Length: 384
Image (cartoon, rainbow, N blue to C red; front, side):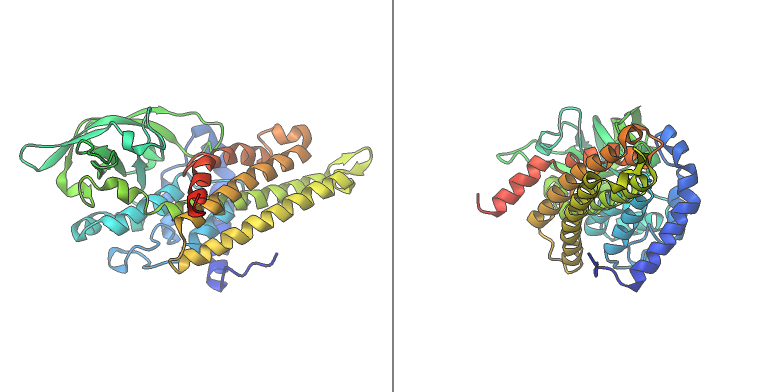
């Protein structure tokens, strides 16, 4: 179906990103997957394209208010090529908005220029070995010193995306005991990853998303200046939900574009592959499967595009974002599986991009809120 969500500026940016991927990413991607992370200089190169300065005010070297559609274009292009920019989306799409929304004037001056220039990448540390969706159960502590000048940070986190390629980590820690509200007492601290006591544990070996490092990290008596508290002490839980609609829209964009790419890979394969003397594409089953896939993805694309428009006008609700994430991730899972099936045995071989898409897409129904959590949000919005 014809899309109307992008204008000429977005399409010009698309060509720039597509050229960049072909030159700077695709030739090296197999090595990056083996290393389980992209090279740090990739982000410096993305900064040269202006891709790390979205929404950062001009006085800090940024581009000023920028439509999220530009980041959506980037996701569509990396998925079109079946590659990734490491934890770029986490840094710029998920963590940066916390700084933009919560940092005071001094913090903005201290942190934002480095982000805009690509010298500072960001990660966020929420999940702990025993705490996932239930953030109120966080055990990491940040104890205010007697003189009130710093916090002492202790604890451990897991499933942290991009920590080894980040200079700053937003850490969710407990600064006060919970009261009648279990969510009270959490705070956000911005911690340099080279701080004494900031230790990297295992680099986790995942099923997919091989070029994005996922780590265990720990904190041992790290001194964090009070000037690195983001927002108000003990109010961190309320901040964590503010960027979730954008994050879930972003996941919907990514998964829909992965499904689009899977269909294209399958189309190319079945037209070139012959069985019983005929192209696989000539069989009715092949046509029907791809027709079903294309129709499902068109529906997901319409949902995503509506979400992008609502995000631009500030009208994207938590429930709408949950609908987008739920439908698009579940659709991508079905579609990519069907497209792999059309590849036969070759679909299971990693040199074929469909195999990479198949492995990469599975986690989308878990991170950013599981499909079950999305259903709960939608049901609540229905008054159930």
